[in-house]
Image (cartoon, rainbow, N blue to C red; front, top):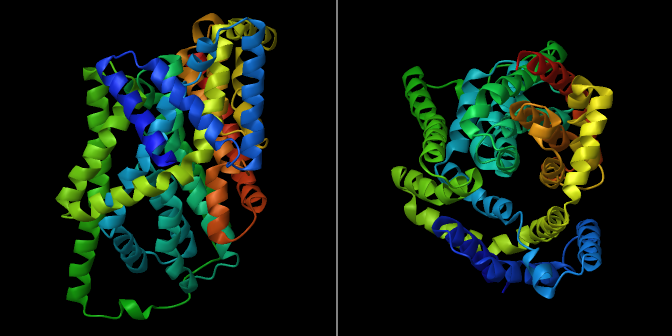
Length: 458
């Protein structure tokens, strides 16, 4: 039953947003039902955090003598984010159906000669796929690269793979349109996606280059063990295979550019929010790509299977995000966010704008160790941070919040990125988190200098 309720509330939300219909009471009622229905089926940590949000929200509403209708209508914020979470995995279907993983594997076996090159290739592929596949990037990259590991003198293969994949995966999350945190920050700071690209793209590139520099320095002694049997073949056949493989992988590159151009064009053409635009375009674009590679039947079958299974996978997200949305709605309704903003402004005046900007990215990182999803932390922070009253450029605030979220994704032991990677390499999430700490510290130092530089320039 839950999958139908999830699907219905997402449909009603998109329908009301597209045609500007007032369906808020129906949507809020379904959201309240979802929270109550999932409360005792989610993980204990998720239930604890969500219950805290609900309890504080109920107390604030009770103290303000709110009506029953106001209690119900407080549910619903962050449904836009959940909609995006629900549809984004569909964009990865054509990548899986097109057999691109085999193409990537072939390129690695033909081109890579040292472990340093293998790390750069792995990190780069993870960066590349992250623009489209979100969390599905982690297993796809791992299982594409893993068969080639035995050809290299790598002492700790799991750490090698975990670092390369998670570092590469995290960097596009600063700017990729399919990233929910990008949608959150854009929605609150009021900037356009296309307008923030000149600010976040350089930081994303700096991050991946930093990863490659550190990896190259640490891998100079690792060289190829010897020639591979799979390369001893007819040169003409090998050349033809290489052309076909590279051409196939090139499809992903073209698709990424095309999708980003469509998003940018739609953002200028329509007045809908960024998250709504991305959510609506995902399925038509994925279907069009599947038609291009002649996998439309397989795509529709995958879509049907996904519909039957997504409710179980997303129940934790629905509970925590709808609970946090309830809390945020109550805070805004009781004007507590204004009080918090005044306090934050006063703090900024005391420490100065440079120190304030340096401290901001550390907040999502700190909350990540409590189990709070970076997207929830960003939403709570963004509601209390008004760029105009703070006297800070909304572009700098956007960069600061996004950079903080990236660091949380890299080391937060309870988030989905570290959790999925730990299950793949069969190590504890805390161990995978510890592997990423040196890089994350280095990256945060770059972020701090970058933010100070932007503050001086803008």
